[in-house]
Structure formats: C-alpha cells, structure tokens
Length: 216
Image 1 (cartoon, rainbow, N blue to C red):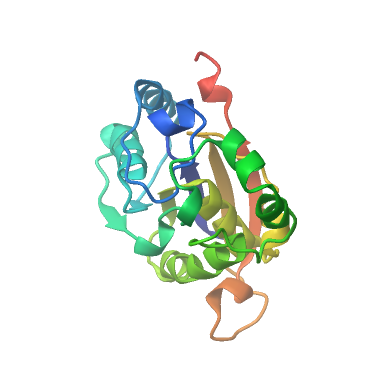
Image 2 (cartoon, rainbow, N blue to C red):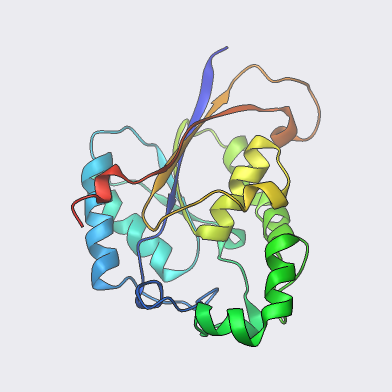
C-alpha cells in the first residue's frame, strides 16, 4: 500500500497556565516565555521536513506555535474551529490540585468515564465526536504532508478518530506541550463507503515525541 498522507500532529507550547498548573480549557491565552522556547525548538526539529499546509485550532496558543514552526516553511494556514480545546466549564481557571479536592466525586467519575461531562463543559467523548468533522476535512483535502496544531484533549480525540478507538482509551495517551506525533494514511482503503475516516487505513508512526525539548 502507498502512503497517501502524512499527518504531523502538534500540541501547542506552554502558556502561563500550563506553567502554573492551572486549568485553561478554551481560555484564549498566549504562549509563555517557556512556551515560545519550546516552539523554537520544535521549529528547529521540523525545519527539514516537507509540509504542504497547516491546520490549526482558533485559539491563540496553538496559532502562535504554528507561526513559530512555520518560519522555516512559509505555509498557508487553515483554521478549524472544532479543533479548539475542551470546554472545562466551571473548572476553568482553577488549580488542578483544588479541583481534585473541591470536586472530588465528579472529578473521579470524569477520570473513569469519558462520557462524564465537566460541570458546565464537555466530556472527552464530546470532544472526540466534534473533532471528527475536522479530520474529515483533512483527509478529504488534496494535501499530502499535513501539519496540525491543537491541544491535549483535541489531539487525543484526533488520535481516537484516526485509529478508530474509543474516547475511554484515547484519553489515556500522555501528551506533552509542544510534542509532536506522526500518522501515516494509506491510499488503499479497507472499504468504500461515505465515511472516509472508517475507510482509511492509518498507522501511528510515533506519539508524543519530545526529544527536541530535552535542552529545556
């Protein structure tokens, strides 16, 4: 089988909230000094790779990471709204340690069951479902070497869709800030239906690559 597309999936660099262990969700925060340094190391890591296009979340931290990485390539950008991070509702802006204590019962249920929604927000199941249309857009495109800049929950949802695994499993994959992962999409489809995701044969070449961040 011939590789039709290669998808390089990147989590954004760190923000001040990431550095301070705060829950940001869909808050539109810029990269921190640390996040900018991470993105610069990513730029150097990917500078010799071939890419055709950048898809990105509408949130600033993802686009800033994309802009820094794109200094070596000069690619066009396509924003995909459904690639924005999980809505964490009532937990937004709180400390992880406080959420563990103040909302212990709900938090434990949320950890165990991907269909449990954060109060006022989304579940991992919701996120994996909503990113599906974005992945269809990517797979239906004429681009072969694709860069995507997203978020922790979103990138796990993309993984779940591409590998056809449930959200309860996809949410268990560790993912660091400014780490990248590579998927290979093969040309010869398993079936011929109207669902390009289910019909595509996708292999995960690598996940959560962080070797470029070792200098930090």
